[in-house]
Amino acid sequence: MSQTITIRKGLDINMKGKAEKILVENAKSKNISIQPPNFTALTPKLLVKVGDKVKAGSPVFFDKYRESIQFVSPSSGTVKDIVRGAKRRVMEIIIEADAEISYLEAKQTDVQQLDGAAVKEMMLSAGLWPFLRMRPIDIIADPKDTPKAIFISSFDSNPLAPDNNFILDGKSAEFNSGIELLNKLTDGKVHLQTRKSANDVFKNAKGVQVNLVKGAHPAGNVGVQMHHIDPINKGEVVWYINPQDVLILGRYSLTGKYDATKIVAVTGENIAERKYVKTLIGSS
Image 1 (tube, one colour):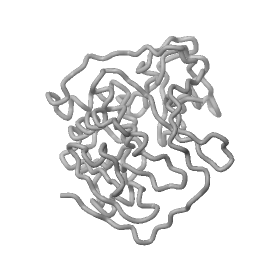
Image 2: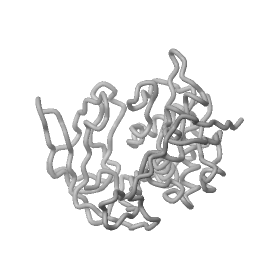
Image 3: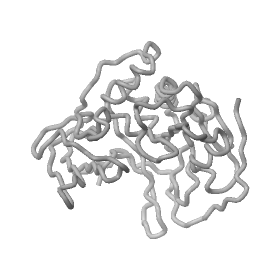
């Protein structure tokens, strides 16, 4: 049953410099960077070396202490450099991207015929697992857990945050396919939090409990939403995921390809051309 929650002690900070609703397609970057330090509590073990050729979806490294969690290349290309820091800690894997992306294609499967264990195995092998985060500890979700619920916040209430209504417009097929995967991973509900102004992709999403959120920032914070809708009790685990990451899951389910395309907002008062840019994860 849907819920309506109201944040009464919030504050929206109206900063200048929001992105205009203009989309720049295929903004390509010569180099793609994957940075292990961006992931809390991760110790990477490399699967590639400088000079290796990779495809989009090829494994690049895995978590030393949770070996089933793989990280894959967002683009095809050549491993240009592996940047190390103190004590030879891996800081960055730089891939020189091909002009045309070639994908490591997987066999397409009917998700409806898979159980939770099979979906989990598919996501781990495809490099999709790092998109799932867990609370109360904000790290990559543990594949050994079964969350009591999975949360998706359809909006971000931070200043100058991108408009997901614009970004996900017309992408119902990918979004619903991604949600179908998420439903296989929990015995509980998948919660989707929306504003009254949400577009049809969110309002008509299938397989989710759509909850209406009112009030100012931090209304878009998924932790705040969890607290009001389904609080985490001792010993419980809840997962969450970004709406654009749900699209990546859905595209993989539909095509068998790891398509790491994302749309980012270029914002700020001093930016001359404030637009939305379609590019790849890890772009310069």
